[in-house]
Length: 266
Image (cartoon, rainbow, N blue to C red; front, side, top):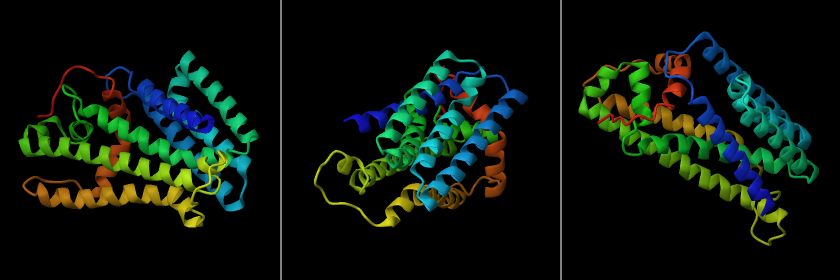
């Protein structure tokens, strides 16, 4: 199915962007790394504004342009390094988005974004659970707090379990969102001419683009509350302070993904 292949391609672009970002030197983040991170955030913020405007005012071409802006944003770190693969990926993505827009599939493009985001993040968490690699949550703890914190066996075990939990939640939500996109009036089944039940309620669209992210935020808040009780024998930074540190140290977190040396938090 052509439209499904297009979604698979955009997912591959997202994975390429994560891999390209993680191939930096493991040295401490520089001013350039922080600047690249801010550019990505600015691009994502622009995408959110464009996507919300397209949904509110029913502008399919604006929806397609919003997806292009998002692709350019996630590829921007590699583009600034003059990566030929990144520029080819951007050009191919632009051609694919334009082709789908001309086939009245702009809304399918926009609806596929939450699926791709959840699937890419699921992959990001899951691939650090491979034997010999440090679980992603353990990397967060080591960079944001201190590596010494992981010497506590309960903390190290919790980091691995939480990494698995995030991978499961994000993967399950990606599957749910894919089913929603399949059954929506302008979804893959309808575009393929398949006669099947449809999810016509506008609430499904808002769950795709708003509710799915709110669910992730709710899981984050609930996990933080559970962590404070489960690991109450150690001090925990306030949630706002932890979130701020996560944003500030994000370049170092991304760079740590390029370190494939066998390590373990256990």
